[in-house]
Length: 159
Ligand code: ADP
Image 1: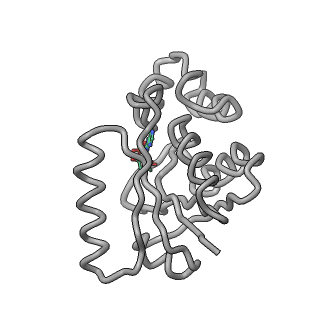
Image 2: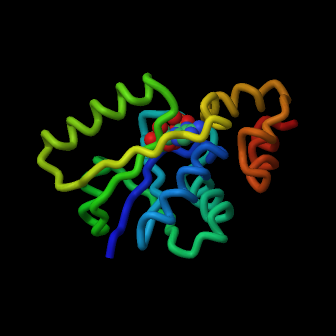
């Protein structure tokens, strides 16, 4: 059975993330979408909230599970029996940092393969950070964030 992991901050989950999740779920028997708990980073949503959001938007995908983890992605992957890490690539900047991460994982001797899915052109300029920057000024985030999640983002900014 092929199990893959797609990890990120998902603060909040965007349409770009969801596209990668939908496409990756077709390539593996099980896809675990894992929220990285990073105590050094301030986030808009708690880890629990982000997990709830991911569960909501992946309800239609029956082989997708939602989890959270602390520490190294590769360690968590081994713990849950995932052999592949899925990453999304938007541009050359993503590529440079993702490739470094891949090399570090190899150096750490972790037996996890990384596969990269190219972002859809509609999502090239999309990031959680951008979505928050638009939302903070009351802008329309319809094209950035799944519709179920929009009210939560808007509510956080008290609009
Ligand atoms: P962000 O970069 O938005 O903070 P994350 O840390 O949650 O996002 O990213 C998790 C993974 O999703 C990374 O592999 C990242 O390259 C990918 N990703 C982020 N935004 C998009 C997008 N719009 N389209 C495709 N992949 C994306």
